[in-house]
Length: 214
Image (cartoon, helix red, strand yellow):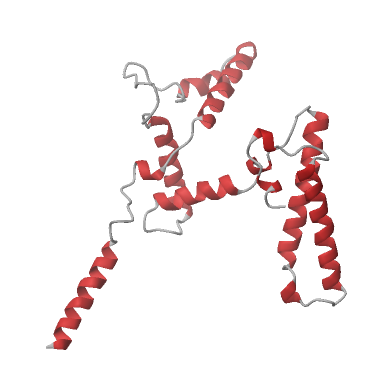
C-alpha cells in the first residue's frame, strides 16, 4: 500500500485497474474490515487506529483512486505518479525553512515569511555549481520579475493585456520550475561544529569539576 502511494517514476505510474490500483482498493476493504472488528468490540482501541488517522487514511486511498480515474478518463493521462501529490514535498519545504532558521526550530509567522523570502530570492540569484554552463554578467536573470511586467498586466488596454498575461504566466512557470534551493549552500551549518551553548556547558561543567576536586 505504501509503495503504491509513493510512485515517482513513469514506469511505476498507477493506472486504472493496474496492480497498484488493485492494491489500493484492497487496502480500503482491509481498513473497513479492521474498523468493523473494532466497532463490534472484538478488538480494543489500542489495536486500532485513532479516529483522525483512520479517516485520513481512508480519504487518502479514495482520493488516489478517484484522481487516477479522473485524469486518465477526462484528460487522457496515461498514469498517476502518486509520489508527486503526497505531502513529502511540503514537509521538505518546511524542513528547509526550519533549517534556515538555525537555532530557531519553531519560527513565528514573521520569521517564517522572512526565511521564505530569503530562500525564494536565493533560489533565483544562486549561480549554478555544476553542469556545462557559465554565469552571464551582462544580462540579469530571466526569471526575475520587474514592476514593469506587473504594470503591463494591470494598466494596459484589454487588447495587449492578454498577451502580457500569457508572458507573465510563462515567467512564473519558469520561476516555479527553477526554485530548487539547498539551505546548506548558503548557511554555515555543519554537524562537526558544536553549538555555542554546548561549548559553554562543557566549559562550566569542567570548571565545576575542577573546583570540586580541589
